[in-house]
Image (cartoon, rainbow, N blue to C red; front, side, top):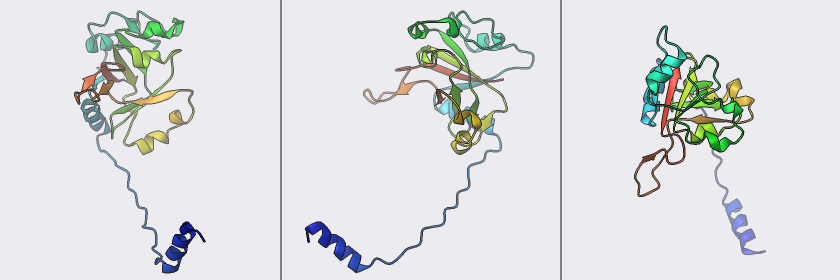
Length: 192
């Protein structure tokens, strides 16, 4: 008998008393005002939330949120201020350093300010290479938790998708928080 077998034999002989598993009771978080919590958590992650005003067009909302944007890439229907159609761009590197990408998100998550972004454009480089992103989601599409988010059908059937919460950030370099180190420097979620 080798030493491993001896140790295992002694452990088995000591006979640890059986201990029943604890009961698993889990009550998911619920927010009375999920849009308000979403806005707070998005802001804590460095992003911001805007709302489409009554009578305001998507073009007007884009200009209100990003008045300085010169190059705007989007394939959203009804957006006429876009200067680049990302579906017509052959080389995804041409979408890097676009001033603003206006994209569709499926829904937001209140507990962490994240938005589910399915790939609805040809090159996902726009999501990570644009200087700023404006993500448009329906005003009533905010769930409370990630548990609810991953149970949604949009997350079940996709080629590529990701959760994004605020702009790109890192604090690896000299422990200084830097925005836009490897992605958008600004993220706004527009409730439509």
